[in-house]
Length: 72
Length: 392
View 1: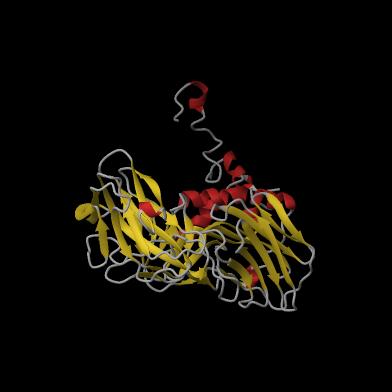
View 2: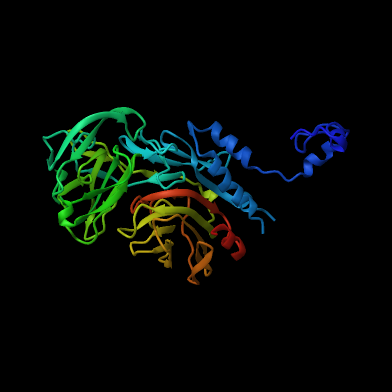
């Protein structure tokens, strides 16, 4: 939801940058390398690129995310 | 520490495919270890919209008939009925106490076509539409199926069987105004020779895609598989031959975990396997839907004569089960749905590399028959905590 009031509005644009992994500016970009992100979108992107037919993405994302979340 | 997606060497899901091949999600670079598919002729599936769809030869089928996408793997089949979508064909279809005509409407494929309407005017128990099978059962199990639709509103009880309702050889099903596949399977060694379907008395019923299929073995229960359309002759389907996946670099040669989530097409008619192997029966790690009801089996064989078989229980082979087979000499186990079901301390040593993933028992026989949601291979054994989490 767009922030339009009080303190929150100030932080729409600060020197911390925007986002985590895509942050390329100022202080914020130092966190990109250590942010924990999923490899699932990347795996599926590669799979789709080499597939003639590609479907069932939502359920596949769930399956892969479940595997990724088992980290014991 | 790594998560299980990172640890997995092969991850196969019902997602990406092409002609002759089903693609692994992982590895994401060569060697991909994809399984090839050889399947002559067209076949059908239930697509994501719930519609019957024809699939080209040698093309994998992602099927949604169990409510979730799964790789559908089947054996050869024959629909012993002719004109499966046109019950007005009096050369093969007969009737009693009913009148059958053709009407135009949206059929189970989602297309508008001519489907058959049976109006039953008689309340006699033998009323209905029927056809003698091209090849009757001589003791093999039989599966009967048809898509039906009630155009009259409300709910009616529809009979499907290998005899009329008076014979008791069939079952009633509630049918409303949406297409629904109704089924009936035989149990024991009966010898059906006829397909019979009947609306409720004084009711109309739209019918499409009738099927009578019999097993190859005697005395087994019947099964209902994917739809095989027919016209003047019987309808047929070729086997899905999934093989030549994996790679020696992707499979643990002394230990590992072979995991799958899937459901059998039926319970216990025959053994149905998937394997990591050397392409023969000599060296292999196999998971079977067992030929005994409510059982799954893990088998390890090496070229030196080791033959290890451990069997665990499931409530229902036809439900989606999560099964992990941990193989390590002296420390093997079958994990099923969150529990270590059975263990083995027997030893083994493979005499040639396991280099193939296939939906058979490793030597191109005892093919899988079912719905596969995922297959995952790990090159090293996992901890009990990881196996419990994986199969839960």
